[in-house]
Picture 1 (cartoon, one colour):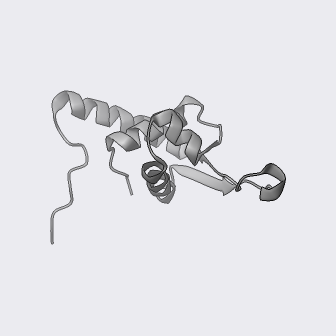
Picture 2 (cartoon, one colour):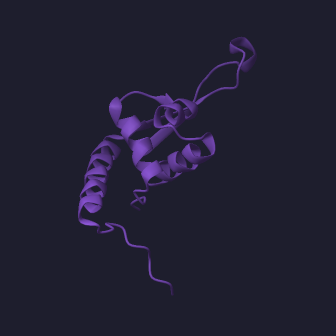
Length: 107
């Protein structure tokens, strides 16, 4: 499954591509992308479902660190390539006015 390259999805991918091997937690991604948590987390979930992103829960005791455990995300090796290709297609489509991922036909 290839996720739609909405502008918020593109912003999230750009943040993750800044340091492809680095783990980032959802709030951090949202801050860097300029997006709200309610926008970022569904995008990260879709990207994970597509195999572009993997995640893990931080192994901490919440009372020791004074906050809830964080869920960290990073691009998979395939996700790095797919994200770069997807962003390139989205960029080309903006220039040409064509949608590289047309909406599915109603059945």
